[in-house]
Image (cartoon, rainbow, N blue to C red; front, side, top):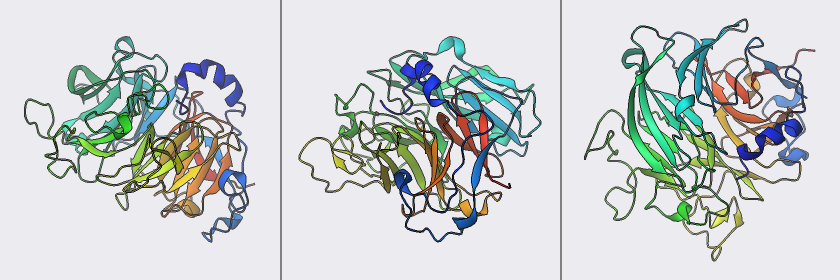
Length: 402
């Protein structure tokens, strides 16, 4: 896997993490396009805007952060997921100097290669029911989707004994786990799963709908059915088809690393990591086949190269500038960076570059060359955007004032 080559990260971070924690390099957003080439003009008002990253919480550091979430419960807290097994919580304040461990799974997970604690989602009614959901690897051959509940005695601590396992998913290899869990505007839980790992999808999981792997799943966590700890939405696209996992919402993914919903439109976006040539950005629709392993991005990878009924990426990029591992982001809906509103912001783990993309996939614009190992993005209660650097720091994007 190219995305987050965590098996090699202890070595890679010496080479990738070349920028200082507080002063990533900056690019003016007026004339840099895809792969650093000249942009053909975005007409979005970015011509005089220069952006930079700043350390959002300079007194705090984290152990391999891979997700950042906010519960939207009015408390203005931020929760950071550490691959090594802990979720940390702290006040969303530049001066925050103290974090506390919300949940600790470090003694009961596998962190081999790309595995670990990989995703967190708060129930839409978290403020009243206290439920949240995690994606983790208890062993090197399983992924678990589980529900926990916040402690009745302490809002900054989970009840570690409250776990209800919703799904246990076999993993043939220890890479390409995907890992994101997210609630859609429909109230259902979406789960991003990679193709099971190795290289080249040896089991053809991306095109095999009899497996959960290589798919984005959708389940109803507020109901149960048929002995499951969840229900399958009746509007899922493959209900009633034989030998098909009815939890599948969309398929044909290699390793969808970080997905998110546009809070204004409800669109589902993901970055899908390529095999060796192209990284891709997808807008995900119900029942869609996104091509892997028939296609890698827009390039034929195997089979007869027939793209009939396949959904093409909205954007792809190659490796000519050292990019090789996409990290999906968010459509920006905050207020601090007016020029970015409505743009999809995403990055590359290997190069540390961050781009914006129009809703239709046009006008890919290079925003920042950070040199940081960008593992994830996240948003706070105000929809402001954060960048999780795998070296332990959390950043925000801002306009440069000097």
